[in-house]
Length: 550
Image 1: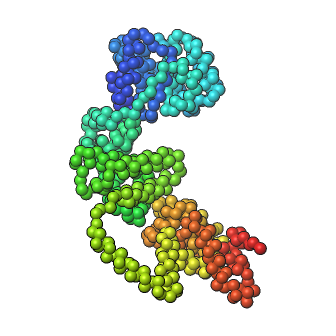
Image 2: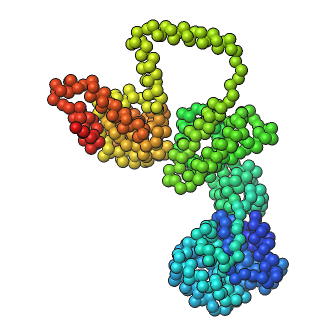
């Protein structure tokens, strides 16, 4: 016999077997027992929660000649044919691929004929929200005045897309996500039935990863079994799902707890290179912080875990940040960037909490002594020449400029030797650089330079503009990523270069300041050479990005 996937082999065949939808199964059983079946039902809820399975069980229970207490016998010809999918009177339709008016008109033509074997003709229309407006209108008339021998069961994951006129003609059942402990019990039952060895932590991890869907849980379990030779372990489950071990997660979050953004980014990009899924990672973060809150309230917190000494209100705010990011990631094509932003936001939340902490009592005499020393120093500065007094201001200015995440000195070094020819060639070859990075398997570097653009180039240096300030900061500070990129570029352009990053938000101002500075310093020399400052700028950046005003 061919192998069957676990979710098919262990699909429930009676209402009693269904996990987690008692409010649905009890209502349907009572309707059968009391002969109060409706002509149309709407099953709505998340994927993998039993909508189609219960629809088939209901079809069997309606037509079974030997059923009792609203349950099918699963032994008669009708029950077996419905289970096998060969019953002529139980018609399953996938609305995703049969969503036109013609398909619904075909149903209208055939529904008037009496069933050939069973007592009822049951139409199960899956993903009904995919029907076109015309198809819904065609179905509406049939639902309004159906023949007595026909029952419609509409299943959907998106009930808000179904017209209200359709919903009002159906009995609606909202399926809920299955609870964690119920999925765990079912997975343990399946493992024992298949004589499989398993770790309890692995079963719980699979159940949590499925997010309330039994089919997803059984599919993940199937993958883990195939990967681990019939032994279900936590490490294998984490590997299959793209998750992260609790020890690695704790080490990563410790970096965030210590406000070490640079190392936190490096660690995160290591996860991405290992094939970890950003969506899975952010779910792990939510569960981790939730567990920290629960452990703190139970008084069982371990001093070695991240955020062990963080206040509850801060943890709640961090969960809000993660939840907002999860919503954004659902509609994003670049989920990695959202998680990078989350790292920064979490550190900002922690920093705000540090600033709001009330200052501790201090020795006032010590402060008075410091103030006296400061007054003395200020009086000395007031008597010093202006040039000396301006020195700290210049130092402060330099410091603030370098705190932007890029070095103006490095950028000036690139621009001093930049020329238009090298820039044009590099711009033409830049898609090849990106493709080569992808072929090398540098996944983190690929996402890093995806939105980058060369804006200046020379024989020895390349200046890249990044849409994200974070990416610019990372290419300047992460030596490993920069060296990877500097190793790839020569294979495309044929010469070794050093890479410098600048954020898009600062590039125009940096370029303007550079041009003005060169204009002031070299105005006299430019006049002697017969060149205008605008001509010099065009040589560096190209005429397409330099605007000359009279």
